[in-house]
Amino acid sequence: MITLPQSALTIITSFQKAGFECYAVGGSVRDLLLNLPTKGWDFTTNATPEQILGLFPDSFYDNQFGTVGIKIRKETNNKDTEPELEDIYEVTTYRSEEGYGDHRHPDKITWGKTLTEDLSRRDFTINAIAFDGKNLIDPYNGEADLSSKLIRTVGNAGDRFREDALRMLRAVRFAARLGFAIEGASAAAINEHAALIQKISAERIRDEFLKILTAEHAADAVLVLKNLGLLHFILPELEESFATPQKSPKRHHIYDVGTHSVMAMKFCPSTDPIVKLATLIHDLGKPKTFRKDAAGVITFYNHEVISARIAKSVGSRLRLSRKQTDLLITLVRWHQFSVDERQTDSALRRFIRRVGKENLAHILALRIGDRLGGGATETSWRLELYKKRLDDVQKLPFTVADLQVNGHDVMSIFDVPPGRIIGEVLDLVFTEVEKGTLANERETLLAKLKELKQNWPKTD
Ligand code: ATP
Ligand code: MG
Image (cartoon, rainbow, N blue to C red; front, top):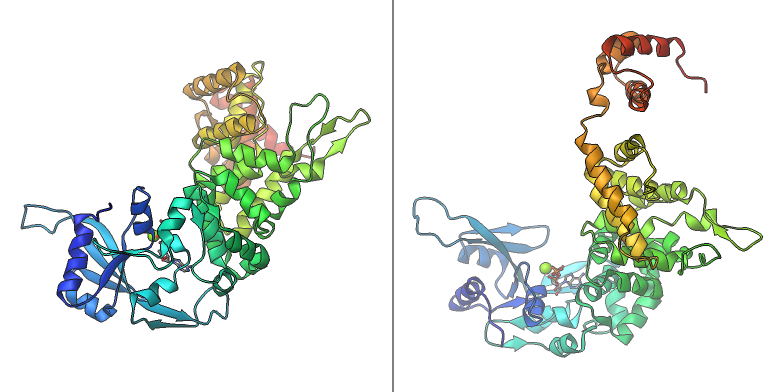
């Protein structure tokens, strides 16, 4: 027995009193039946947007999606101030959609007359159940698929994926989140139509893919993407890396690069989609750097440099923001950091500067995934010691900003405007001060700057 929250019932009753039909539908009903927390309620009705606006004073029309938003406000006893906004419920008029010339958008949307018509345009049986608080309307047996844990299209799978190719990724996303399998005919149709995903904008692919990576069953889902032929169009470098073996004498690796990548992503404890993605692609430079010596020992020298290049192109292909791309590249580029206890404090500081203080937790999460995904234990005394030293080193307040000279000194001595050179010069000076070969005293450092200026640009 399932019950709707009071606020949802109130909305449905208001429609019914005015002579309209109204049902909760889609993800909210699905999650309610699965006893999962619902995020956002969606309703469908035979009232037109104008009629809905007339019924609810606190509502607005979102033209782009043809949806009316109804503002739900918190209960309050204070009559003088407007109660706080609690949620926005989305109400969509019954629709039917026709002709999908571009494999994504219907050429024509018309208001539908019946609920059944509206349910028939929805993607999966589990998303096509309607509920008015009393009756479940479930013409496609979505409830049965919920109990058999199956993602199955409404109607003919091939037709539905040809209409809107994004549905192929939505199928994998729901499977990833719910731990469901994609039903046979639906899976076969994805396999057949995988190439149509190229019709979908990179932004939409990015959104679905990042949601897949943070879902509970992300690792299985990436393998499903591979098996259904979608991965090839999203992350071909990953697909190819399954052909690169790593098992060799003197090496701890047990998996090929692709399997290791997926396992590392699975065990990476972060909830940040970019950290998950970084973990998934951190080793993708390996196929290009693969070497096997006479004794059969496999190496991948400097693979992280190639991986970072791949990270850059993945960032632009998936239209990640500048900030997301920078994070992706940084984590991938420096993922090989050593936790050797013999490292000096200044080596640790260099690492912190490269990765950025704010990203240390991210790169440690990548390392944990990398270890677990390679068959090692979650941590080691070395890693624990390293983490502690990272904390300790950061307590010592010493960065470029603590130098007794600053950017203005560099600009005036070098007679240059603001630009990259300033950071480069300060870094040089900082390195020497940190090593102890130069004292952090203003006169000494100004003299050093003048000396550097004589020999600039460096010729080595
Ligand atoms: P989530 O919990 O991720 O929001 P959801 O099922 O609510 O899942 P939405 O994208 O919010 O998914 O869409 C709401 C409903 O609209 C879906 O449940 C489905 O019935 C329908 N729908 C959404 N996108 C499509 C699509 N591309 N093709 C067909 N029906 C769709
Ligand atoms: Mg939703």
